[in-house]
Amino acid sequence: MIGEPGRHTRAEILSQPGAWQTSLRVVEAASAEQRALWSDARPDAVVFTGCGSTHYLAVSAAAVVAQLTGVPARGVPASELILYPETVLPARGRVLLVAVSRSGETTETLEGVRAFRAAGRGEIVTLSCYPDRPLARLGAANLVFPEAQEESVAQTRAFTSLYLACLALAATWAGRDDVRGALAVAPVAGSRLLESGLALPRRLGRDLSIDRVYLLGSGARYGLACELSLKLKEMSLTHSEPFHFLEFRHGPKSMVTPSTLVVGLLSESGRSAEEDVLAELRALGARALTIGTPDADVALPPELAEPASIVLSLLPGQWLAFERALAKGLDPDRPTHLDAVVRLERVRD
Image 1 (cartoon, rainbow, N blue to C red):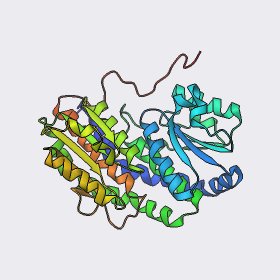
Image 2: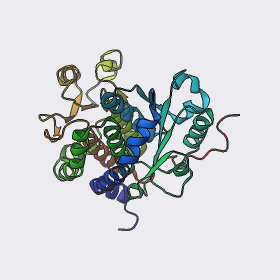
Image 3: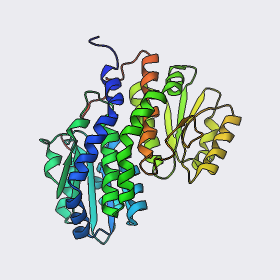
Image 4: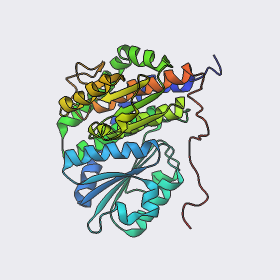
């Protein structure tokens, strides 16, 4: 019905695999251009940037780029490019800047990109969802994904579509056709997961005896843990925090109670150490939702190699936040105090 709480968010979560197919086609169409840009740019470092959700996308995508290309990469908030560029850009060498924004008009992102361009440090690639917005005119290459546009304030479909596009770019730059092939399977795998993997996130989301959620992920999954923590805050006003898996032992575990839910984004490479952490937290009384490995609560397809499988781990976490919002009588389409785009009169004097 008209006005049903969360109707846009629900539709956007469930429609993600179709948007992914479009995102991959956009990157594939630009693959020759991107290979040439990487070759000509000869970057000594790659910096991904964004704000809010796309900052966390930047953190995760940078980890994948470093892994696949061997070039140092990091993800930073766009505001750091404006206020403290000397802390985020290497002192010497060529830098490839990748700027990501759903709206294409977030003030900090635009100012950060313009400052980088004025400094002449290297090439710029932009990714956004609107072809007529300012960001889509600022790069040497500007990739636009209209199918990922959203009505909701909290990003779901836009985040995963832009993230998958960044993974495809990383594979293209690295000359990894095997990874590009694995990414092409993600939309089908995502559809299957949405059909069969949401029952436990739904049940836990509706359980209001849970009063805090900690999201654990390491490597490229850390940025995704940050993003899912943000979704819980935005949609459901839940106390949530992200941590690297092993870091949770170093102080934060003192916060664990029987009303704690720990969401673990498991990897094959770190599985043994990650499961040890979860066992400790269960012994302290926490409940756990594991996502990733074949024996996890929400298993991802074992035939879908990393990093292609990583994007799927976002779907159960998004649904957890969505269901929790509804259970608390909130409208996930309209988070408290938030707007879809942050526009500022001035970032720096």
